[in-house]
Image 1 (spheres, rainbow, N blue to C red):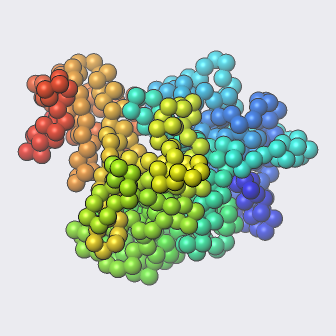
Image 2 (cartoon, one colour; image 1 turned 120 degrees about the vertical axis):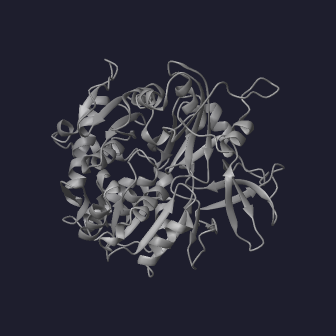
Image 3 (cartoon, helix red, strand yellow; image 1 turned 90 degrees about the vertical axis):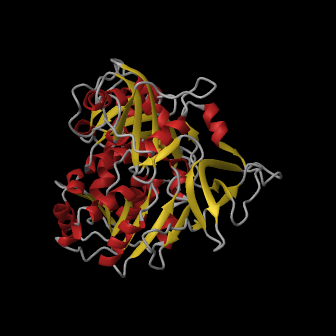
Length: 505
């Protein structure tokens, strides 16, 4: 079973039904299959390789989804990169992933410079290729569900993005149980919010294909225009939202529902960060009969590993539980001795699942450190992923997220290494030393630095190399950063100084 089986099955049942649409166009399942096969044919003829990375410069459009499926049909794997990313970051991903080709689906930044030897293909040109059915059939017979399907490039502590590789099996082992638990069906319309280079979007794409449903790619601008957002949800009859916490908070914070309450919304599933109950209660007030669920699961797991269906009203000061494991996996909460934690204790969230990623592309060392043998199983090989997230077991029998174990954070739904931001901060001319911390209560990245530049100058420089969600929100300029007895930056002292009310420049 591969995701191509999902597409073919949906096309056989609903050939004329809209599969995906964006603000400008829609594509039926018949057209989706046809164009994907054309793109696959073109790539096979041009590249003559299998299981190699193909970067797709994706925009919020139908063409991006078609490109993903075309790459998958060619038995290669796609690396989605949002076209709005800074050119410098795109080049960093190019250097790490070393794709065999780039597919562009829209207008490309003039500053984007691929190496001269790297072929760059326009979607429109590939989609004009005549389908070669015998060629596709021969290749299809060699496909394995363990073949890589896509790679998501996440933040890396060395300043080099990490490519998390997912196989077809990663998706096909998760999506059926996901759809069953939340009762997805062919009548559903998924409202895609997540960028295509963010793993959440895979749940929109493949839930749609699996169920023979429809998905609407919501324009990016809607999330800063509440009236437009609710109009789009209403007019497109969106039933299912699988959104980041940040997106839900923006809609609630901007009082989107004062304009209109879309009547078709039946499910609101959220992940990426801790959901502020105050914002959740806004949504629940307008949708008292909808299903709300707190989802947990890092990119390395594909989809999610834990879910909690909200079954009561929570006070604004309460925290939502993590809930139970999805049926295709087991979640372990282990202390430093690799023992299951007891009530009142805190431990690391560790995941054994059929949807685990294959690992990190071209990074055996990090893969070996994160994907390890399950320490509770000494009988046979069993891979386990150490998330680095900490949870506590309370007396009520529920597990609750506590914090990151290391220096990695979740901000605006993205997993970020603060060290990567520091690398670029320290590279700004005039900055002599820099360090970052994360204010969990205010959900803000704080940059502490010594040097001459002011906030505006630093932000302007960081925009050249970092995506918007990695730009610090608060800047604290100092004469010098505090050091501990080992001569290292004293992060605890920085946090204390910030907490005492040091003002940003």
